Image 1 (cartoon, helix red, strand yellow):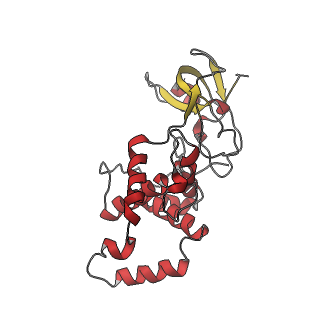
Image 2: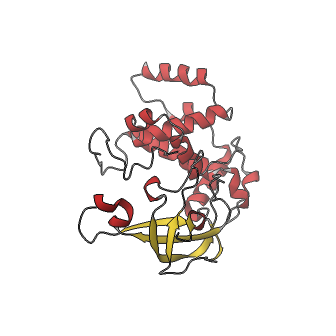
Image 3: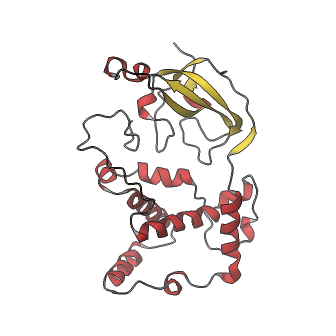
Length: 251
């Protein structure tokens, strides 16, 4: 299965991509980013992450896990036509909204009613109406602690199977609901250029091999190794960070 979010190497897209250098093109995008960060800062996985947080003691009603993998999986689950139609943060909005509805934090009729209400207002809604009290600041403190300290996926020193300079082939395992393996690398061969310094976990078991701690490699590919006779001439080199589960011995 090819997932639409890895467009590298796909042909026949309707028009060239437009790269906007602005971080946030609209004010609402800034708010969506803040909602995502708040959800990550209150995510249940932080109780067993590194560093560990006393997340169970935070007076929040959000008791689920939300990581970058959940956000990415929401985008990957979109209809391909919708994926190419919507802007970057529109994909975020769709994934976050679907998650909150699926988990029972919101109802679709509530969203529809609030959308109608906001469209009829000339003034921007105030924070108090949308957010409510902060319960003594404990929620803000937890989110700020997360922003300062993060939730590193590193769990140990590296235990690599492949050394620098080793030729490897990239697997072509089924993609499932979410993957970190670019489609255009599948089945291609490259050379290990670097082994990252630790074993790294992924906070989401994707079903295609990653989740538990493992080494991560930077693998080097030449254009000819990726695209064969279609490669353009020149000395370009492509580097990809890949979990060990995606590497195998060359044929």
